[in-house]
Every structure is written in C-alpha cells, then in structure tokens.
Length: 172
Image (cartoon, rainbow, N blue to C red; front, top):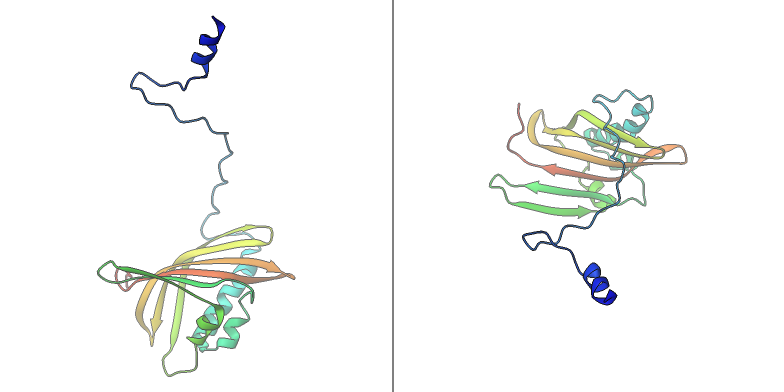
C-alpha cells in the first residue's frame, strides 16, 4: 500500500495543462546599481589614464605610445563592424596588429569618447561609452567603446578593448 504512494510522490508534478513547472532557483542578490555618469570616484582619472593615453597615441599615430597603455599579455581588440546595409563582421586583433594601424601618416586622427561609464572593483575596471572617430576633422565612423582594465603593479592597463563601428547614425 505504501509503495504506490511513494511512487506517486516521486513522479514529476505537472499543472492542469500537463506542463512541468520550472525548477526553483537559489535566490541571488541583484547586482549593485551602475555608477552615475559622469563617474565621480577619485580613482576615475586613474582608470581613464590609459584610455586617454591610447587616444593620444592614436592622435599622434604613435604605436609605441599606444603600447604603453596596453597590458602586453592582454587579449587585444575585438571589432564589430556594421555595414550600412546591416551586415556585420566580427574580427579580433592582437595588440601588435592593432598598433600597426597607427603608423605615421598625413591624416590627423581623433577619437572622442562621450560621457564614459566607469565601473571598478579593486584592481578590475571597465570603461564603456559612445565614441566618434574623426579623420582630418571629418566624422569617419562611430560606435561604442568597451575597455577592460586591470591594475598591475599599481598601474592601470588596458587588458582588452572591444568596439562597434558604423558609418550611419553617428550624429553631427
């Protein structure tokens, strides 16, 4: 008599529609809210230092200066290019390949990062923001930059950078 009751209790339970409910999950505390933009933490300037050094190196077209902002053992860059028709390509470049794009030349490069969001946790940081890239003062493309940074030996360095790149919807 008890065996049929045990088998019934062990059988998967379903609702009236015959659907088994999803298993319960362990409650997890929500993530803390994101920091306000612009970020006012005193360490924000230190986190932004390698990002600003990278932009200065781009403007100077100086690969060696750019390399000083990078964590040598970092991952490099991932680029998502969106064509005007909507097609997308994803590529990844090691730091050496990224830096090779910034050799001396006649054009003037400028990248502007607008109101970046900065998040830190000890020796790990993230910078995220919309950017616009100009060549000789003319808007060339825009997108979103995402920098992963680590503090090593007291210095913030860019471990990875990921950006989207498009030529439409960039504004003025």
